[in-house]
Image (cartoon, rainbow over all chains, first blue to last red; front, side, top):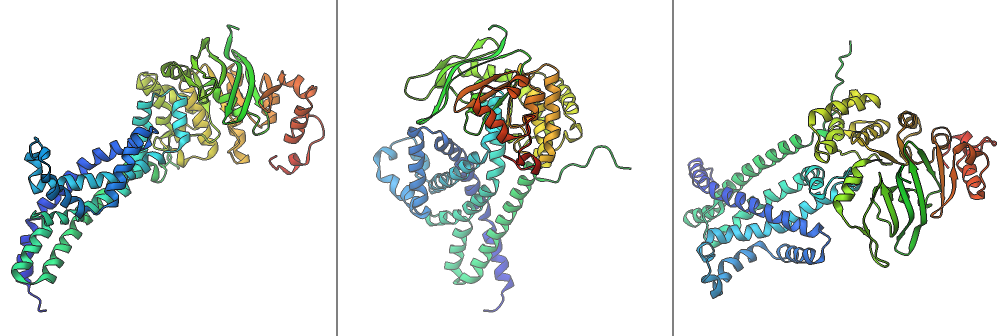
Length: 238
Length: 272
């Protein structure tokens, strides 16, 4: 295969046009999914069976089935129900874009809730007890003691999940969306040069995810001052 | 009875089928320093934790600073506090120091000290900071104010934890084996702080294995055995002529507490 710089450049330029949609899908589903994940995690740790069991079932279903199947069920399946076609939601659900966002959101929420749950449970019991012994009310305790520590604990896991989501957006191409992978597929069907096109697409994902990893590493560092070396003594040594 | 800072009446506590406390009554007057002794499993820590309702007694009443805690105590089933806010209010008057320090690891020492005064008692931050600085000077770790707990030795962490409890301006201080998790060479610095507090007339209840502290510092010694109080009196009296055979066995086992010949454990420095 001869090296064709001009083709590579043209391919890269074409694929770059898909980056905004890729990022949009990832960002939207990760942020919506985070809200849902948090609610699910709270249900899991609530200790109330009526809340815990539905959250467990949710995790079981969405982690136990392929994302591609979930996308297809939402995109092709929901329109089978007249109730949905006639509801206000149909404005969104008839668009491939919102079907993809919905599937990605529901999927990431299932994984995210486990990461958040792990973070919540990681807070040392003794520290919670110390807060209770001070007369701290449950909400204050959550806000001041549990959440700040849980957040730090779950960052590495969540950065992993965000990376997975960026890559998962590639599946949106199966329901007609022209994000990076969608454009790549189109270019291949026009040029019959899959290797170069996919190498370009892969490099783009690699770049995106590299940026995300760095971002999370920075965030983790900023939020974990206690993991840094102890401050130097205030009185200077002579 | 009105001068009791803490009054426990006929406290029963069980975990499943195991009853840990079988009807314990204990009054702590203002300014008393009570050492609670006993072998592990005797229920001394549970008793202490009933005072600030970290454990809810299955039967019996808890009165702190003249206010009796409202409790739901069904004959079978889990007991609970009737009013969460009342419990929170009473807990704020009772400082607690834990065996494993339990400092909040995401906050600096100074932030640990002002956390509850600011967010529970809603006192002005500036005032809390000033008081916290003074407390850190008292326990001798003012140079560590901007350190995180992980950067401190065990002794420093426990002194910070004592200062954190004092920052709430508590009426009563509870100590749950405050030196048991410390390396032997760090025990002294913590005991010194506790001795100072006792001397300034603080009401203190101390679960401890430090016989010297119980004998020399406390004004009263309570010996728990299998969930009942076996011995209760002034340390001089109790250590010298205890009527309880079990207590005599206990101090012989713990060692160092009596004038009798030292047991081998004391000489070798081994922990009983």
